Length: 328
Image 1 (cartoon, helix red, strand yellow):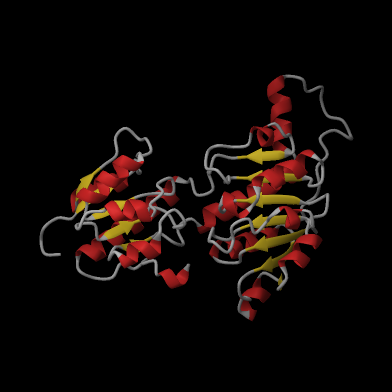
Image 2 (image 1 turned 30 degrees about the vertical axis):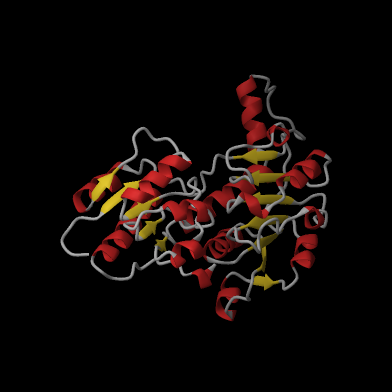
């Protein structure tokens, strides 16, 4: 790209150290105030930038890509998931897409365990009781939850995050089961003592906890649909730190309300930040605002990966975290 500094547009505020480094390296336009860009703003940004740095809340579809200028050559996504970007259309138009894989693994796995514990041990109910001022002191049968040790955990999607969840859950004494597009290598399976299920239906019907850790793709949309949710034991708990679209949220809400599923811990939702109000009312549901990867360390590392991808591209090389349509 020669010695000219690349024009980079960032769609949301990033950690300060990341923004400072970007200013040093590129001709960067930062987002101020920190609000989501409208479609019009996104379209305009894609016309004036060499590189766009979007995040999960920016939906970049074929229509928007058609408006992109000749300059746009790279979409360096801030985050691992790229289901909000039409990667196929981007590649057809000569625009590369990169992401930041691996960075969120440990943090998301930590949050998955936190949700499993929060739901099974009724932590939010305990918090609410303390905050209400109504607690009358300890009692032998008060606030009884369930023991996590010995429970069967069914992991849906055994990639980096799923495997990290398995390691943690193993340390808590849980039995590890998983369903994945393809079976893990024997040595990884042995390390976490995981049982592979080719049939998702059969796995789901036997588990105590289901953890959704697969990406959102056309083939995983509503993978946990009403029919599959009905296979769960009434004592089962569902946890999702991946993508909301993998679960039919309306069906899940209906079943939780009817007592057909014991509880749920959700960090992601099918319709972004618009959450079913009936879901919010339930005491056996723990809802978090997409915090799975929200650690200072993780978000800075994510920014560093974006910078490496953009810098490598600026130097005329293939970005290390290039997303190839065949991967999706």
